Image (cartoon, rainbow, N blue to C red; front, side, top):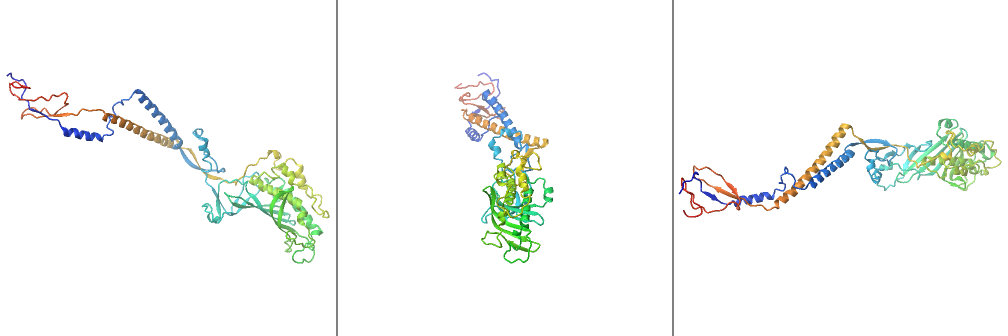
Length: 495
């Protein structure tokens, strides 16, 4: 036997480690994201190019969305239009019209007018002010905007649906003062009852109301002139128009007052049902009822409504037209409709008692009004063809929530920070999904089980350590003996 040049070697003991294999299998079961992301994803180039393009488009879309949202901040603005939309921004043309229209009525807050508040409309004359008398809120209403039924939120309701329900008046011929008061009722959603008054004082009213409706003051002068002529007539002396009590002596009345209801156009004039009409003389504290509304007659029964029907109707038509102009109503409006002007304003009177001396200035203002083509003496070129009227509303301003662009520093922090936060999160989610798909593919590929070779050595021999090999490339040959020293190493059979 020849001597071996190798030192004495240990006797190897080759045993497969089954416990190591089972532990590896159990641990791999929970490695859902075990793919090595530092390696190139083994997909064709079209996948990589598509991923980059989609990621860039996502970045652009997110940046635009962030600029349109986080790049703006809300703030308050007062606007007269309750149904306004947001200000026009760079992204507004990109929005569908339905999105913009849904903003109407949602950006502004209602204005609270308590009972007793005084308001004006956005009418063309703005001569009259309106006091909120009350709200017609039913007692069983659960409207939270009407606590104690003393206030209701106003949301820009149009006033064209409101109607004049009652008119009261006082005509004082001694002071030449005319006062008319109208009550206006509005339906839901703003069920307010409004009261407005017009007072004519010669000189004062003319000089102080530069925006008065045309000829309203002049027609008031026609009315007080006619009443003065009637009271100067013997037919209207106190002894001939006595009331419930016998009035001694002679004298004249100085004041006419009454309440009217249901003032509606009829037969070319505004006829009102008379609730009552009173003749009085406040200086002597006397009064008499001259109305035949109840069927009772007093004195010689002078029917004063017949004697004043034309100038009274002229002024009522102008007064109601003034109110309707504030409400935005064109029908039967002598200031907005030329046909209504010639239908409801009369410059002659066939109803008055012919024995009463009326004088040359009777119905003078009505004659002047019908002879003009220019209807506004304060604006020299205002004709009917130049008039336009929209549905009116209460003249107020609503607090509205709209948006404006942030300052540069805030804009950069908000927009860039939000953009990359969202985009980075989506990119990480995408990569985790790809990693999961790849790791599942690796787990489905067949793998060989490793065999662990435990090599033991004799004392003093070099430690070779464990060797790992597969069953296919390591033959399991029987070892019969190991000869140390210069002996030959016999394998596979007897020496």
